[in-house]
Image (cartoon, rainbow, N blue to C red; front, side, top):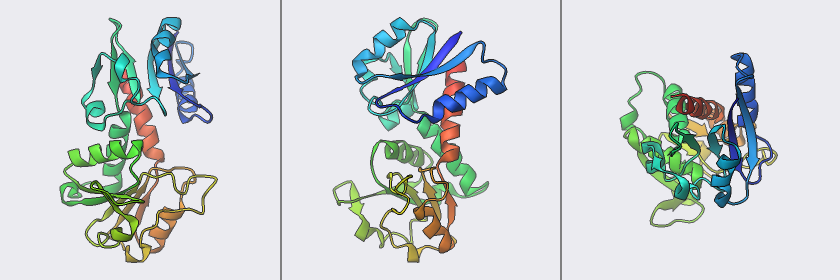
Length: 248
């Protein structure tokens, strides 16, 4: 039995466990592959986790370990290097640990599908709302596509403008990506504080949140004619990328 899993702390609801368990059943391989949750509080438990589970071939990583596991890895894929965070680790046949960032791939694939075939991505400018860990993968993916990125945060800094200033960018920046948790269930009455009245059919609103399927951010955008997309496909695609990494 080959084992895969998710590490993080705390682990409550897990998309990954359900997704992979269902996938293994559908493919008729649940007698050969298993996906489990490993709630570890400190990254120092990483080596002992693999020692205790010699059949553990790969893991997904969630908060708070996406950077603290670096010290235990033998190499990083270009995605992890660019993002500066790891959310997939593969254990090679010779016992080496390689770190990847599948959020990078998942966002890029989902975005390109959203924009549609033939869209001139390199001419696009994007506003990134919030700058936590998830935003790093989004920024790296966008910059590699040639998209100009402007960060928006609650407080302006040398890296970001604040929400009040963002109103001056909405005409030129047609892609707006919400990387903040605002609007996530159960606080569905919250949304980023941008000027939604400036939006029109030339704007693309992408929300990394997927529960609810239509956040207030997306609803307000749609009401003003913008095209909208939630984070569910990105989640699926990053999971698929994990599986591809572990199998190659």
